[in-house]
Length: 119
Image 1: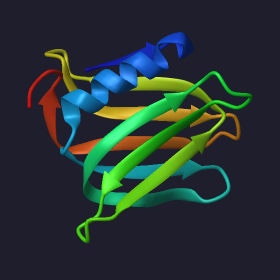
Image 2 (image 1 turned 180 degrees about the vertical axis):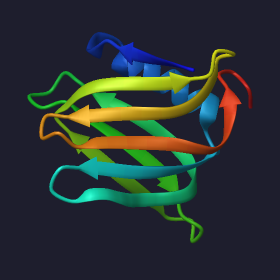
Image 3 (image 1 turned 90 degrees about the vertical axis):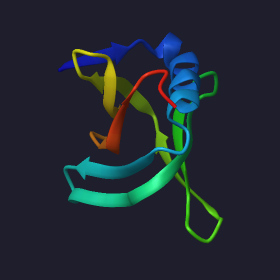
Image 4 (image 1 turned 45 degrees about the vertical axis):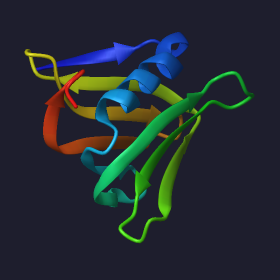
């Protein structure tokens, strides 16, 4: 297993590709924060996409999922400082980690990991 640190200049492109490769995959989102400990935000919902906005005053990363009622749920990470993708040695994406300035780490993990490019 290996963790790839994505440089900020590549966040938007990398997350666009990641979203295209994993759209519809079931994932969960857990937040780890000093003040609250571990907290599950999303549990096994289909991924709609992950986007990065880095040109504004404060960068944001948005994670979107489809709810069973057809609505969309989003989680916005303000002031991200690190973006990491955890992969197996065979190139299968296992998780995305986003760390923010306040020390919170958001971990998006897949129910069933898929290789990048598999649909």
